[in-house]
Picture 1: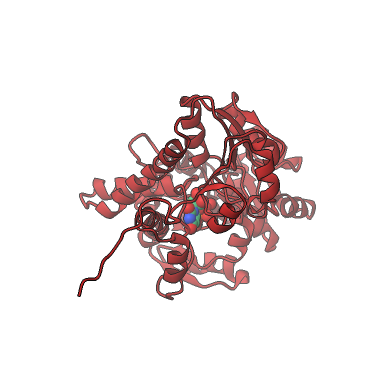
Picture 2: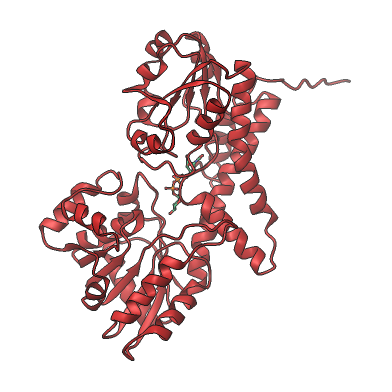
Length: 442
Ligand code: UDX
């Protein structure tokens, strides 16, 4: 099939290259000419395992093209994917201006029937909005359909998630157009759900809000574990073995971040308020997650007495492992608090340091974790990189001047850390604070 994908961010680029890999003719469009020039030269705008090789292979074999000429890309395509950014506005509402611009571009270029597919994460009702924009701006009286086909890929595993999604959601106005999109995905042999446009749009938000709430529930349990002397990693294991709960997204930590959960939970809350349908559970998730890094930082301050004059190593800057993305990364909150308190900060991350330098040029950046920890009073682990999980702890301890480790991802075993001479603080690893005492009277 001939396809074009408007927007070469995480979703657009990965979708485009995977469809090309499945044998389609794909044109990736972006208004940023510099980005297109770099993509043509094989330079990726983002770090994503396996992406560069897959782009190179499909471009070499002539199935994948890059352009900033939206009109010609639309004219050459049967199916047009919209995968542009949908950033949040100040009040949490989703900014649809890039979606609108793409729809206007499609309207101006359409010369025959097109299927327009919304892949960006957009609030319920955006399918109708896109239909209206195209209808009122189309230059020729040609027919089209608008489909919702939300994307569930995660950063860091975007290619594998796209090749092997848990489900493919197709929200279509009729069966014929649904079958056309289904045909595109058929080679993946994954479960598909065909539904109406509004339900498909809601599936995406409901899923992300549910996962964000699941993490937040684990974090709330972790906070309670700290007080009652339980270990949240054990609790999560015990909960996760219940098939109805499952172990995924139960890892307590310093709070969820990234480009999706914070934005999507706020957008869904905005939708619920707009339609006069309050969602207090979601408000509580958002509030609890905002408080989670503050709580962690409070714990650091309590253990260190003061940040003033302390040398602190921050291990991990990305909002999660296997990405260089620092959007809403909790490392930024930690660094901000440390700097405000007068600490001297040295950070290390395998790939997210360049992005962080733009936000915090004033801190030190090390070549590796040991260099960051050199002479440090405390080490803070913020991202669950494998290289931190496997780190030589004896060497880390030897590099440090102090013994404090604040583990925002529960990567280490408290007993082992104690044995090695660290003063260890995880998240929800009980016994650290007060153990509740129960007495049984007869
Ligand atoms: C998420 C959704 O998973 C994906 O389906 C959607 O398309 C985009 O948003 P992503 O933001 O890339 O993907 O990362 P994800 O792996 O979901 O992690 C999000 C945040 O939650 C990270 O900060 C991560 O560290 C945190 N997290 C995740 C936890 O704190 N605990 C967990 O158990 C899982």
